[in-house]
Image: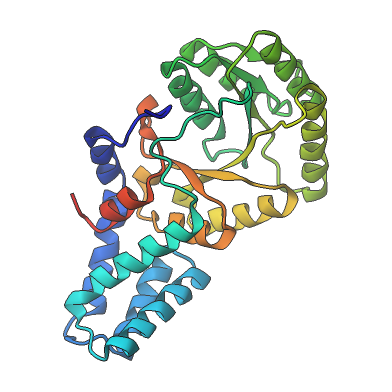
Amino acid sequence: MGLFGIFNKKKKETLDKGLERTQQSFFSKITKAVAGKSKVDDDVLDNLEEVLITSDVGIETTLKIIERIQERVARDKYVTTSELNGILREEIASLLAENNTNDNEDWDLPTDHKPYVILVVGVNGVGKTTTIGKLAYQFKQAGKKVYLGAADTFRAAAVEQLCIWGERVGVPVIKQQMGSDPASVAFDTLTSAKANQADVVLIDTAGRLHNKVGLMNELKKVKDVMKKVLPDAPDEVMLVLDGSTGQNAFEQAKQFSAVTNITSMAITKLDGTAKGGVVIGISDQLKVPVKYIGLGEGMEDLQLFNKQQFVDSLFGEK
């Protein structure tokens, strides 16, 4: 069994509840899009295009989905509106399959080296530090030795928040004075984690995008310093995005991917919004796998992303 266990019934219920607003909004729009129509024609496809765009799937991904449905309609000659949900579901599932290497439902830490180092990036306010805290909790529950690094040294509140999570979860937090060099914090964290044979390290970083050059230089310096301790570090660069911001999350993802090599994403706050479609668009446009989704405040409400279960919940399948 993997680190976070198989996708069980309780997790599916949490996912269904977390995507409830998105699912209800999505289907009320689709119902209106096909009202009075028996056949999928140009009018229905135009309406469906609007549904997907207003559901925060994104323009480019929407056009890709519509084009695929048009090809199926042309090939099959006659497609009824009652078949549309099934076709749309298949095409969305297909897109997610193309952009995620696996379902992550049985993911585990690599066994060839430790610690496994995750550098966490994202703008302030997206739930970055909370996501780190929840990940630390779940890693610890799985029996792993966890270290946290407070490298967001530009905000005293960020360091304080991470320390609170460290105490709550019961894992050590490596920190320095406010305004210290983030790379120095990362160095100290990895040095301590390596000496104490930690299994996993989570490094928090500053969430400033107003100066892209500064951010790029800072992240590069952090990575370079990490390699002095562990040549392969970081193993993962995870971007945390707030799903409730819809298209703003798209823009943040594009900007961060322009300044550093993002290898995975965590999309938070999906339970409080009808903008869950953003998961589809961001995954498609960035070609970076969504690894975690946040569906509530609880420690267990950060889940490994399972694309099949996500599509099932989006389309209301129990």
